[in-house]
Length: 446
Image (cartoon, rainbow, N blue to C red; front, side, top):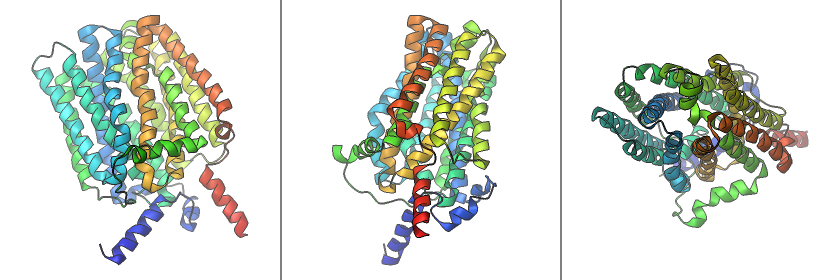
């Protein structure tokens, strides 16, 4: 590499890692309400398309897997094992995956992970065509899927900040979340409808979408990132964990999500709720799985045009509290429409928490360790989702279906109250830390 090229790349890395609002351009563009202007950046557009198609395919598969497994065994514990089969390899590999995201090209890692997910879809299709009669092959595929997701998570989170100018990052986060939840809206509904033609149809179409996602990600030009060539030692692999531990505001934000959603993750029980309590079929299950995505998508689109800038901590804690209250409603109702509304509001509350947490992690993390910090974040997210699904299946087998959901909602509210006390820096946070620093620097310059 020539000196001039190295200098240009260094500047690109420095600019890409600066927080939004740190430049005059950021201040001028902050007045714009055109939340979709970020799509003018080619790399972000390809990245967003690939991520959306991949998510759509996975959500379709999730409906088919859940319904297929429950139809074969009628065992609530097996629904919990679906989450555990994905989380166990994820937990084992995630910190190593974060180190890989800082050492290797993040675009390539995401493309390879999508290709592995494509292989999972093709294997599920092959098993179904062969007349699947036991569930263990499905769990084996989910182990592979969890391994692929471990490497995809940190690379996906860490590369986004380098795909757009600093002043566009908050819009990119909101629009990325909108597209993600749009896929969550469409995926379960399409999966439920297509399941009427059999699980093989779901797996065939989802595999096609994953193939398109791989191609789109390959068309995305590698984004500049800080160079990191340290070998994978315990010291370097755990750098992200040490950084998170040293930042109470980040630790509080991501641990809040971990414990709140860990106890309140009732989505794993939706096949049983749909079948045994609400008395609806695969299409109704698809609608139930879609409802949280609708709430999250509407919320994230709103945040694209009207981002949260004040009382950030209160918004985050309030979003988690809404999630807990709506989980209680879901566990106490036998009416399909009420359950849909509760799930919709759960998605909106969760979206606020996700939005604040993602901005905090990416704004406060240097690019050189962004992959490893994103890996720690992914551990917390993964634990709250997959491990939460296992916890829901376990408690449902012990307490009963509706009591398990009610217990999860109550525990989420308890966690929210405790975290407001344990992490006062989070509950008192008015603006994002980088915005406070910018305001202080501006006052000092005057």
